[in-house]
Image 1 (tube, rainbow, N blue to C red):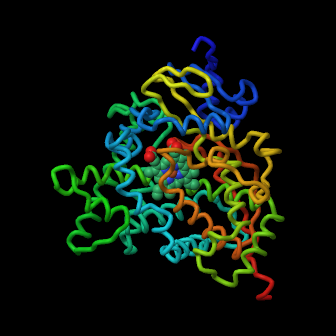
Image 2 (tube, protein in one colour):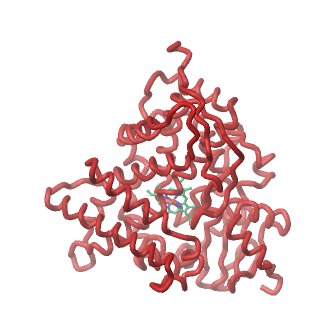
Image 3 (tube, rainbow, N blue to C red):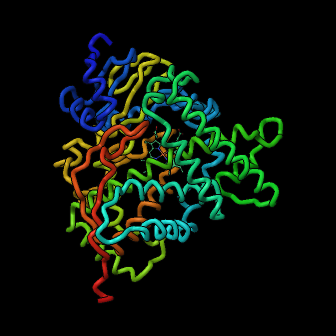
Amino acid sequence: MSLAIRLNPLQQLRYFSQPLSMGKWIRETYGDFVPMHFQGMDYIGVTSAEIARQVFAADPNGYDVFWKESFAGLMGDQSVWVLIGEKHRKERLLFAPAVHANHFRSYGGVIREIVKNHFGTWQEGQTIKAIDTTLNIALDVIMRLVFGVEGEDEMREGHKVLSESTENIHPLIVFFPKLQRPWFPLWRKYAQSREAMYAWTDRLVAARRAAGRNVQDVLGVLMNTKDENGNLVSNDYIHTELNSILSAGHETTAVALGWTLYELARHPEVVKKLREELSAQGPDPDPALLLTLPYLDAVCKEAIRLHPILAECARIPMQPIEIAGHQIAAGQALGISIVSIHHDPKLYPQPDIFRPERFLERHYSVYEFLPFGGGHRRCMGSGLAEYTMRIALAEVIMRWNFEAVREDFDVRRNIAMGPKYGIPLRITGRYIPAALI
Ligand code: HEM
């Protein structure tokens, strides 16, 4: 690592606070394989799709987890985020059916109802922060489809405890795990909100058991899971996995949907084409049909290509390995830069421009377009996130006209990135399809 780049303190700060612009700069300045040294860490920035392919293709059992100490503190040391090897594989297999895209197909009506409720609160002439609406949508979807919450009171209470526990994940307690101590106020705040969430989850579990309710959502799967001695797993285990899924799925989906609204607000020509495609399906098309519409698909992909939610996904080899002709020592992190690959002009000409058509003109491989990461740790909730985005967009675009109030920027939110200003939008009026005029 003698040739490793040493980022100065200002660059390190930028790396954390503005990962998108920094990721682009690193690729443009240093190329596609960039050894770096910062924060006492040896880190290799991978900025090309081909090298990303090689990292994902290596033996998954040879990799440890990046930021393990931090994630174990936040989620618990048995979280799917931190398990490795056979335990990790088993854990994913356990709830894969409950988070698989096919499982959610039949819940399209539920997602649409949630979306209608939240966009229904918009009013003509109002200026809103899109992220507030999309956070509410994403949270309600997870509460209904992952936690299986139904009653209005339960939803209201759940909304409060779950949103507090995700909001309280401050970047300082993510990037400096030594601050995960009771003396540190931000950690205390997070730990308290996490306790409230666990207590609420225990009440849900108890109510389900008392009612003999057996549903195959994620909570249902976890409640029926047995440990190696044949006993039902503990509530601690249920807490850990639900917290991991909530933290992975709430803000990510909300930010992705928010950026899509932002780009639509700035591109009326895209809105027009989208409306043509949607109008051809008739009023209130079956939600599952939305997954087959090519332009809607291209719009969603282009929004998360341009604004990836996670800047990178990293792997730590536990033994020396060779990647792209380079010898990597055990313990050197390999950080696949999603932001750099998504902004590579060789793959995406004029990469800073929002142009959904590029996804209709060319097929991108899973290493060229990788908003959900890849390999053995690829996102487990991509199907739910993609479905939610499509249903929400179809609903809002056929109901409202809106415009962007100001330019917004991708900055670090906590683990993920998000819009600096929360995407302020002005609701200019209701959209009435031509057929109804
Ligand atoms: C647009 C929304 C989302 C984005 C952009 C996203 C992105 C990602 C990324 C980049 C990873 C790391 C993958 C890797 O290391 O290769 C990940 C992991 C994960 N995601 Fe998502 N995610 C989204 C929504 C969701 C949802 C809705 C859920 C659950 C309902 C979810 C559950 C998970 C889980 C459990 C993991 C950890 C997988 C593992 O370590 O094995 N995600 N996600």
